Length: 446
Image (cartoon, rainbow, N blue to C red):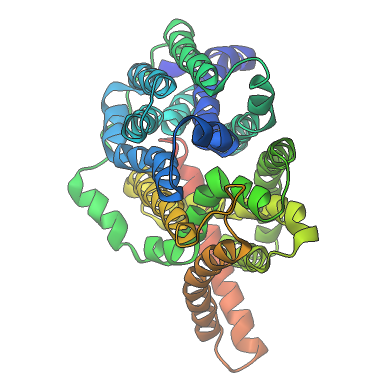
């Protein structure tokens, strides 16, 4: 494998010096992104919060994460991943420590925002560092491993955090995570080699060119809203839904959230394998995404129905099928010119995390329209409306996708359908070949 600066490094050296330190940053980012779902009861017990405040508190992470995407992307281009990640993890450690010391809604929200800002570059920094250290042909599989590490981080935010509460309180948990952020930053500083900063990746004009690109707009029309629903709901409200509607204990909720995060790991790997299998049969990734999102929305409709025996199964299926939205990054990369690939992923992150903020906060606002019962729970009707609204908002994107496919295939039967399939196959082959040739230059940001 080629190392930073063009030197050759063994696979073990690349794993220990590059992949592991930066992957740990992504692991911590995914852990802190969803940890409030398990700590909801402890937070409500320590500080009086309304549902709207709880939603805003948790979603502040997503808003800050979204706002730093473009500045962090430009900083990575200019200074390289090691330097940028060191400073960002220091900022994240400060935010986590302030959260552990917070005693008011405002203090906790600002601390949560600092966390999001500090962890906003973890995935992008990891991708850029790995791209400098390994051969281009290995990038897709290694990126899959990186996503799996993030799934492990999300899984750690469930049952392991719940177990930690047997030995400390929620403030102690966050204090330990602050120390972990500092330790990971130190690990990157001591182990990771200096890497050449990538060439400048475009200016403001190129960023606006991303949003004007027809392929980018078609992709986000179908996948963006389901992606934000997946991030926003799984990060907070699934656990509360299981407790309020299903009447499950905190331990049972933590176990199901743990299973859901394990489903992220298997779902991401399985979705990659399914997409490769489909490509060999001339089925484009957008078609795979469309079919997956139909199932994902169907699960949300079932969740809105509140059928009690199936709640645990639906919570895991929600996470498993939600991994189909991760195809958005690959589809956007394949549909963009080579000069805009990195900017496209950064712009996509901006939209996804802004949307996740709105979903989390909006879900809480809907629940707040109903009064709490004596057990501080919201009625099933509140969740029915909230999930129903989310499912309804995703239907126009699905309708436009299938209408567009019908118009391309035409009403003339099999001949038109076969012609469209041949065109799709040709376009997929060309864009896939173009994407492969780009990988030698830079990896996609996230």
